Amino acid sequence: MSVQFSFSFSGDDIEDDGGSNSMATAPNVSAAVQPQPAASAFPVQGKPLVPATSHDLQYMLSQLPSKIAYSILDIDLDGSGTTQLPRRELWDVRVQLMAEDSGGDAEPGLGNHDVKTGVYEGGFKSWESSVDLVKVLSLSKTFLSDMDIVPRLIELGCGTALPSLALFRWSLSLRACDGDSVLSIVLADYNSTVLQLVTLPNFILCWALHQRAESPLLEEALSSEGELELTPEVLKAFDEYLRARRISLSFFSGAWSPEFVDLVGSNTTSGIEVGSKRRTIILGAETIYSPFALSAFTQTILSLMEQEKAQGNTAETLVGAKKLYFGVGGSLDDFVTKTRELGANVEEVREETEGVRRGVVRCSLP
Picture 1 (cartoon, rainbow, N blue to C red):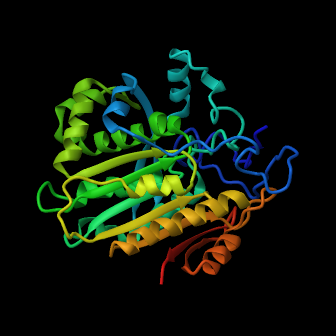
Picture 2: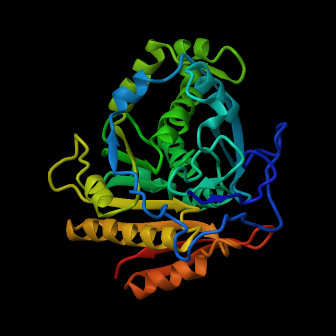
């Protein structure tokens, strides 16, 4: 039987202060855990891991509904302004699934549990540590327009992908049509349904809202408040925009494993000049909630950074997490200790002491 965790946030999701759904913060994090053998929090004992799989962007675009509903999350960048990130509404995902006769609320992750181990890893919801990562990334976003390197982003356990979404949004302003190097964004989640139902739609929403003032097509598609019409013309324009700006989106699902590392490492982006040096930033928010998840995630980020180092590229990992996941077993301190034991450098770059204690750390290889 899979293990179900509820992290006791007051509401479906992290939400904006200004809307009908306020930002959900809880003074403590708790976990309701069904009885289980020791050290089996994830994966489910006796059942195989979900295999690592790559997903074609064109096929994913072809599977989108004709319309999606969204809300806007305002993120305060610690007094240096705000950034606005759109997210597809969870109720809209439920409506799509029911219309497709796919079970609606029976879809893992759209019910009462934040995590159902070995089945669903929390990707439909936006977690507080993903906002912390956005704030850290805002301090160094100019690397997106550095013409001397190829920026590559890899978000593991991306879900709604707020950190990658923020970098994508900033890149739309920082990058010109000509002269910039390729920007590669790799989005990985345990569940392929999360990638299809929320991750990709969020990127399309971000692009459409940013470009609407310059496009009558998008202005028309966004004419109904809180909704975006995904006409064939809109999807074609999105694809053409990515190509013109040399932005590559790649999608992967499945468990963290050596096979996953090999699959992501073999991902190649067209248009990269021979001899180009890459700067890779690996991102992970709320990815270490249990001892097994912590171990698998740590091995994965170190393997990915070692791949980059072997190719002469620079790489670092930014990890946002709670200081302690009560009742589940994971903690940021345990992650720091394990990562250092395996030979990596780790430094704390952000700490949150109000509400649920959280932090962001940067990892790199010597």
